[in-house]
Length: 187
Image 1 (cartoon, rainbow, N blue to C red):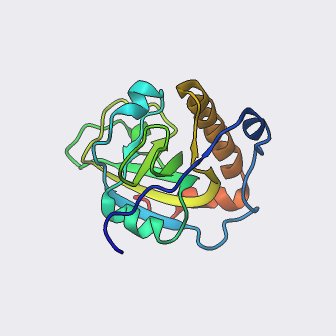
Image 2 (image 1 turned 90 degrees about the vertical axis):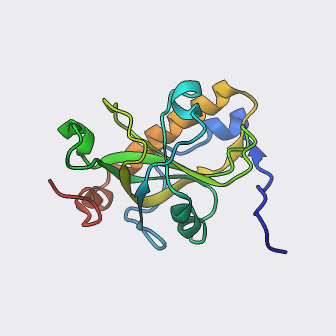
Image 3 (image 1 turned 45 degrees about the vertical axis):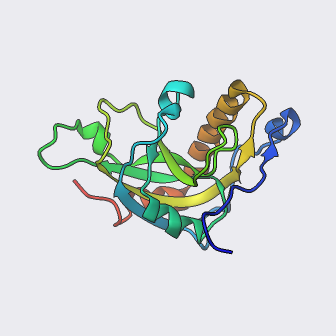
């Protein structure tokens, strides 16, 4: 008993399952346990998101993962995020906005990770890297379970679909209200 948790076996994404995914997920307004608010300094990850998948991610610190994984199951989530640079750092205004995000909480079975990670993809083209800079996240809903994939291309195709589903799901009045959540820093 105890020790490091082991990754659960993940279902493999099939072509049929991929094509049967809905465009919008979740109820018309967030329901418990959402919203889930997280914050912490962005950790260096495996370097695969931007380089291998074309989807750069900000890895949340381990303490955030513990709080999150006790409230929800592994999978892909949607909500909003804000990168908060130090006052002295030259960071363009458009990079400081509250922006839509998708987040993977899990073991990344395609890559056979040995540890649980929470990786946030903020849907924005940032001008700078931001390792060590604080990120604030409001998780508002669940998109899909964590899956394994038969190829990198199939994984990328599902990530792109996750982003479209997140944007459509956030484009509802009760979700857009969270753009002004007090968790985020006003400018």
